[in-house]
Image (cartoon, rainbow, N blue to C red):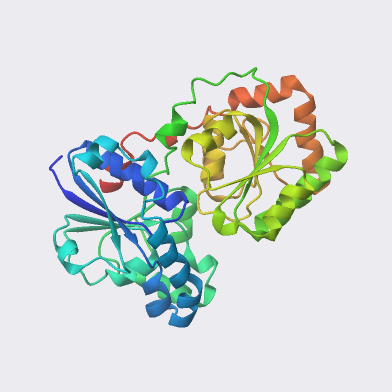
Length: 370
């Protein structure tokens, strides 16, 4: 593979799938002796709110102060801990903070630019870079239906390769884009390494809960409330992003007698997966859904919506996961039955990582570029 200079633009310096996958991509591409520039906007979503939404004052209120303060006091890439330190020191991986957009001088030096959001597609649509790749991480019109036609037009007119991460997303795009490549989101190396070292018989805590937003909170609360009514001896842990540190998440922790952890690093998250029997992931919409896949690599059985994102690629009810029906009493009894029956629980745990080879992290960046 010919040596290239590759830029990866993350949407924001926030813990989440896009930033994490960008770090993994940088590791892969730098191993091939490419120079990788990770661009991090100090003030993210500028183009989105100024040129698409045309609501600059909302952008200022939502992002300007918060992200500026974050940059001034924390000048570090949120997933720097998983980057290859040797390649950072040798200059093969470079982290560059940009105010809102990448400078023309930097753009002109790139052989390839990887974009992660529809706002960035609009911002860089007229720049002539040898190769542009747009990773469709989510269908933005799910949240902003009035802009659906604008988003679709931007994708249609994108002069580059469009890649998404699961069949679910490919299908969502098929009404306006053809020949979209699918490259599954990988499990990170820090979690992937545990897949063959799981102690099936190890005693674990009961339920780990991932809370992303208020919708997830409501479903999670109803489930935990019901299962606690049926059994008051469960050991429950909640993880959430600091951006969602609100009264609801704290109340969920308090009302379910659960421990709460915010913005954990990779190693800490892996330990939680390894020390819990189930991961409760109640999201009804997710573009991919990384936590269930990560959990499975650690022998932690996901409880999830079978129609969520990539779930159909790996999840089989009562084989390696539990499918939610959102009949709260039924779901709570189903999980409690598994927790009380060791044979059923161990069978699920044994099967939990049998369908994850497709999420192998090796050469993820190379697959995206090709």
